[in-house]
Length: 303
Image (tube, rainbow, N blue to C red):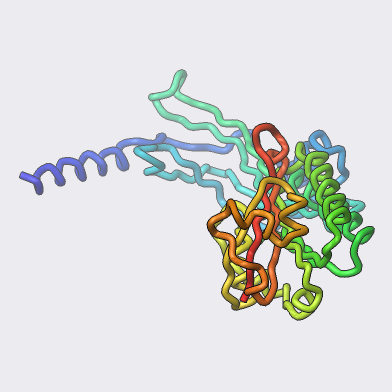
């Protein structure tokens, strides 16, 4: 009986695959490559005000889904249609490079449609605006860091293409707090271009900071939306890492006491003197400053 039911389900599924779709799918008013490039330039300018250079990096025959059953079950080639992968480069700041995809419009011909046909418009998707935002944020982060510090490290987050991770060495609460407020203003300023999360790893111990190879961070991996400090410190140091404190925002008492101010109320607190050094990890994004949300700080002991 079970085999019979499986056969019926399989037969029905195969019928859907073979019996659905469209009689014919044909390109509709395709643009020349020159026209397509001009269209993309116009769209990017309309959205960002930027003059750009557009290069075709891949061109392939366009296939579209014409039948669905809990997902796409039938793809059909669009006669004469193409899909283009493009590179979009800012004409002034060549470091701003986005990518995009342009698909020709097409018409589905089949009796299931009114008047026997159904038209689909061309589509264009891209990440240029996002890449522009990341470029501007990074530049302003660097400017703010240069005003406060001689040495620091700034990397793209290993688990978030729109996030940054920053490694600094300072024990000056006011300087760090000013820097964090500047970072806040920067990401909020460019939120319409890109939503950027960021993490700041704060080392008080200068020797530990100088002896750490932060380049190894880039080889790390993490499954969180923004890589988690404890996991990353373990990976780029190869050492044991234990969380000994946490707070909302950049807490003065917790920072200046190395977590000891919370010793009586925090069950996970371990005397910071029992570790080789500690790292303060501050994590935030634009939504962290919208009530009732707040940024977070955690303290990790490293040994």
